[in-house]
Length: 250
Image 1 (cartoon, one colour):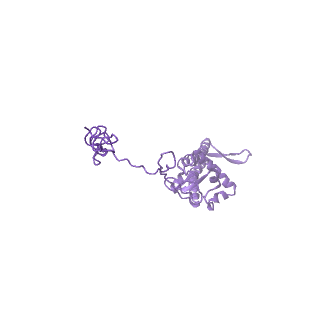
Image 2 (cartoon, rainbow, N blue to C red):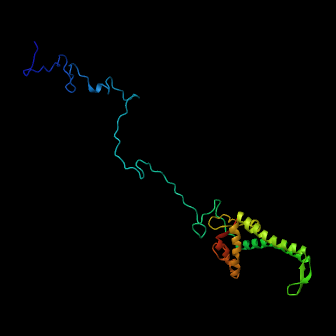
């Protein structure tokens, strides 16, 4: 004969089917002792040891969210190198120096010396050929009837050679050589170069010959253009200013 409570409920000391009553916090539908929740792992069985290498990592709160850096979403800021820029040409900002450093402007005395030496290199053979042309001549009369000396065919040849020599030397020395390397023969010996005032590079044959022809402006100004480098901050003649060149020490 089973005992019941007045309300008809089973006694508190037994489970639904007898035996040990279930834990009210986790009722066992079949009676008996309930399995403590903390005694099982996520899939049943013994719980994993927190110190085990196979244990699942503990979840942590990520903490407060921070606003992303400037740029695209999620993009990390990229450090930008700051370059100080190129130093300016003395007294003239904006002209970058060449890779090997900023050269010094040539003095007026060295420039005059280079010009005289270049001229001497062609004047000596030129007047030598003219002398040979004069030697190979004979007495005669000019178109007005005045007595003069008329060159012989050999004398004419020497005269033509003198003109060809002067022209070829000018084109080669002051056009090709100076345009390609920045220096004529005399400028090379004295350590001078004619370069573009912005890039500090040689001019090329065309601009080099144009600069030589522009020296006419220096002479037409009562030679003031040739003296202008004495007080000009870039030491330029009028021809240098027209073509955009400076003369520097090599």
